[in-house]
Image 1 (cartoon, helix red, strand yellow):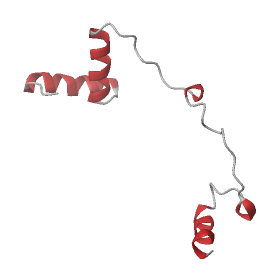
Image 2 (image 1 turned 120 degrees about the vertical axis):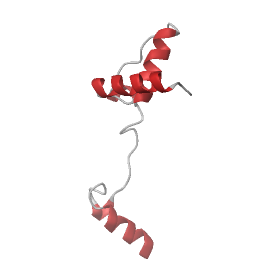
Image 3 (image 1 turned 45 degrees about the vertical axis):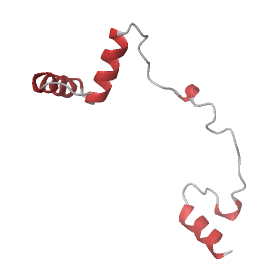
Image 4 (image 1 turned 120 degrees about the horizontal axis):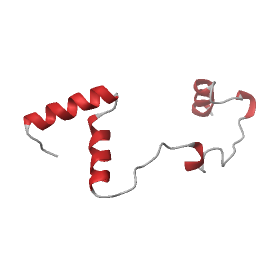
Length: 77
């Protein structure tokens, strides 16, 4: 989106005051202008795929903390 210098400065200042990015402000403003419902913050319920699977971590459990070793074991095999 291209805007004039005055609009850009105003947007940048408002983003700074709110502690948000200029992109967030543009999205919120456009949604409000178009009469769309504001999007709320995402919660864990919005991501049902998290923890939906399982894997065999073998002797390197927890792989999330020992991923370098796990990748090395895969590379050597």
